[in-house]
Every structure is written in structure tokens, then in C-alpha cells.
Amino acid sequence: MTITRDDAVLGCDPRIDGTRVGVRHVPDA
Image (tube, rainbow, N blue to C red; front, side, top):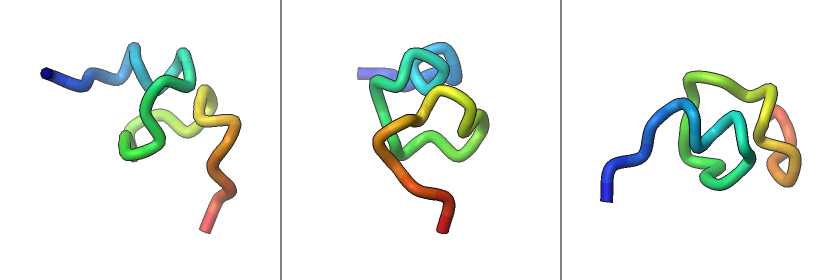
């Protein structure tokens, strides 16, 4: 499974460090 920045924008995967704008359930460390 390839995780793209689009997934991060949707808040699907917190592991993406490209765009934090979509990662709602992960605090900025």
C-alpha cells in the first residue's frame, strides 16, 4: 500500500510528514 500526501490531507495516515494540515488526530511534536 502506497501512502501519498493526498492520504495525509484526508487525515488517513499520520505517518506522512509531508502535509500536516490534514493530520488532525496527530499533534505537532
